Structures are given as C-alpha cells and as structure tokens.
Image (cartoon, rainbow, N blue to C red):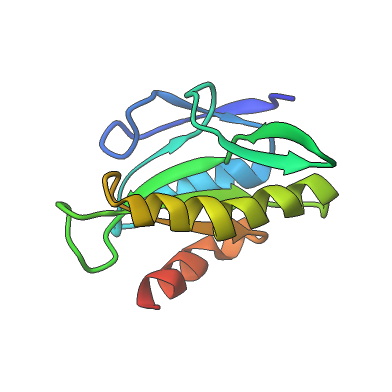
Length: 139
C-alpha cells in the first residue's frame, strides 16, 4: 500500500519522487541523498527490476526496495551497485527473498561480470543506515 511520496534531489535520483510504503523507506531515501558516497539511487517502484525466487515450489518475483550506485573506493567509473531492502517485520517470504538475492543472484551477476559489481544489504534500522552502508564499504 502506497502511503506517500518523497521529493528527490535531481542530482541523486533520476525520478522526481520516491513512492513510500513506509516511513522507513522515506528515511532511507533521505539518508541516501545526504551521503557523499552515493552517486545515485532509485526506489525500485515499477522499474521492472526483479529477482526470481521459489517458495513452496512456486516461482515468484522479488522487487527489492532500492538500487544504489555508490563509491566504495573504486571511483565513479566502477561503482558498487547496492540493492537495499528495508525490512520491518519478519516474514517467511522475506527471509527467502533476501536469502535468494544474497546467496544466488548477487554471486551470479558478479560472476557474469558484464553488469558491474553488485552487493546486497538488508536494513532493519533506517535511522542507522548510513553507518550500516559505511561499514559495508569498509569490508
């Protein structure tokens, strides 16, 4: 359910508004815009970017919350593409989606090599997400 929108900075996001399903997503967008290490980001709403997964023998598509291009020390010509999932409550399907993205999709796209470098981050505290992202970059 869409709750509201967040007006973006045109130098950080190529769409004018972030569609918010929670206040947590709004805080995430605000933090991404404030971070110097973030080249650009987008809320993955109706962009067609999904990750296939299987649950109970049925195929599904997982739509992660954000896609971020950031500087992890390799510069603007070789950004890290970071998929961010903002997680509130624990759900069985969320665990399967996150696990599939982290253990199957990320290694596969990185192994392919033709789509840049990718990582996945699940954020369960958007008020601490800057520190979480910086910690990921340092690793």
